[in-house]
Amino acid sequence: MKNQLSFYASKLAYELDASDLFNALKNQAIIVIDARTPDFYLAEHIPNAINIPHRTMSEATTSHLDKQFLYVAYCDGVGCNASTKGAYNLVKLGFQVKELIGGIAWWKLEGYETIGTQGAAGTPIFCGC
Image 1 (tube, rainbow, N blue to C red):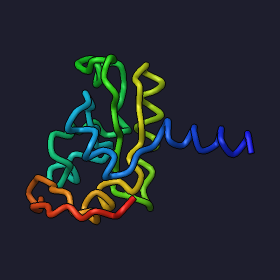
Image 2 (image 1 turned 90 degrees about the vertical axis):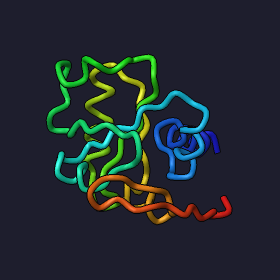
Image 3 (image 1 turned 135 degrees about the vertical axis):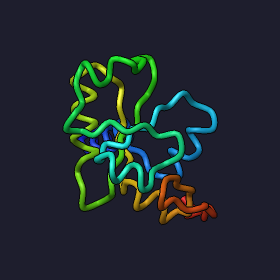
């Protein structure tokens, strides 16, 4: 039982879902990082997210970021691990990070707005959790 508690506490410490992020953005100082390439970011991204592709994350490309904030990294979704790579890179650089499970795909599935050349208005649904 203790191992299970530790496992699930760890998951919650490092991951959040779309509805948790949506609600947290209303009342917490969170910076959302799109870890995909610029083309994908320009096409569609979570509002107010900034684009730092995981392959380019370094001291130089993150020097403008305040390490006092919580950062949430995301990518396309379940079949993509750019958010994991981005979160890993950010942690190595000294940032406090969580990963958005399901990426932008699950963000859209829950009906939240995206912006960009292919952005879509949102109509949030409530999953009941």
